[in-house]
Image 1 (cartoon, rainbow, N blue to C red):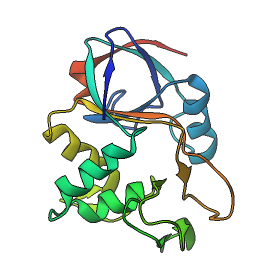
Image 2 (image 1 turned 135 degrees about the horizontal axis):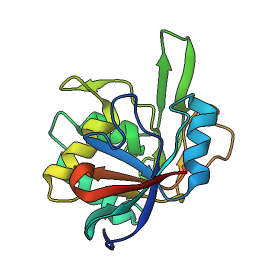
Image 3 (image 1 turned 90 degrees about the horizontal axis):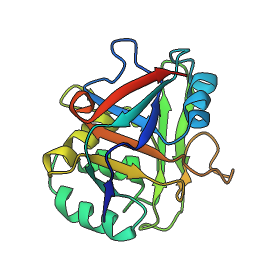
Length: 185
């Protein structure tokens, strides 16, 4: 359920329009994944290389026990629906549609209820924040420094019949305290 991320580990990020690290931030294990975000989502055209300033305790989504644990922790909280939409855990059907662009973002039907399927396009807001950012913050409140999402689980993005796996990603709480920029690559 936990993964120790050693001091000095290298991560990559395409910065938001506001800051290089953000208050809470998504980081990637390779420059290739960061470049994919630029290509597909038109984010910043820059990629920065970071390294961790200290060892980090991350919740590890490669273990199904992590999903079981969080299902019980978040069960009767405002973040529960976000947890289910983001991870697919406990849900058999999902359809998230962007009404402004009239496009499907995540969808699946008739999947096994306790089989994870990742949707990072969670549009509903919790406390005024984008869904999976709110979810990451809740993990920080549990005493973790963030999470590790492996490239092990199917993605629910775009086409439910296409066998696409979610990319490896790291969410870091308080990145200004946890990582330092090495270079623009």
